[in-house]
Image 1 (tube, rainbow, N blue to C red):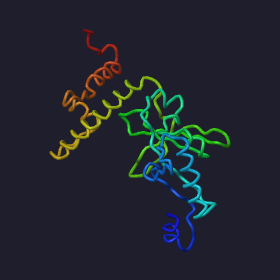
Image 2 (tube, rainbow, N blue to C red):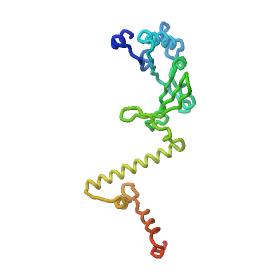
Image 3 (cartoon, one colour):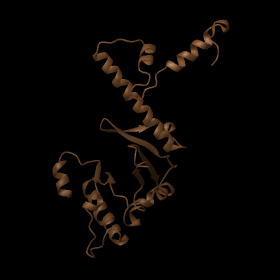
Image 4 (cartoon, rainbow, N blue to C red):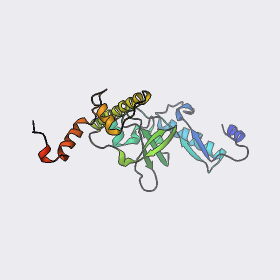
Length: 217
């Protein structure tokens, strides 16, 4: 592998070596130990990964990508890095760790947990893929309470948005033009839309002089 890297980077050695994932390259050594064997894992990390870095570029950074095991959301919340698959020796080897998981299966948002061996602790980050790229989200927008109710309200808000947009497109295709209030009155009760008729009637009553108001029914 070192020879292949030297051939690909003939002018200058790489600054970063990435093994993604570990499972595809794992070597248990002469004993043939598996990934759950701490001795086999340490042999792989010291006698394979570190030797490769020393042979390619001793100053290079190494990124190891690894899978997580099946763990409950409660376990991941209490100690995220216990969800790392296989031997615990891996967790004691790296200098910094990142663990990505999805707190809500119905959402595309992931949470990025951070573990550092040196320096102050860093808070987790919320990330999502936008136009093919991972971007960081503002954690202040994360809903902390009544998440299920909030998700239903969000879905209903999106449904109404799609209904109104579809009606606007249909009316535009028929060459009909409305003001905002006219469209609200026209769309009352159509395709699940409520419109503004009731609000306009109430507003008219409140603004009309008392003597001109019709008797209350």
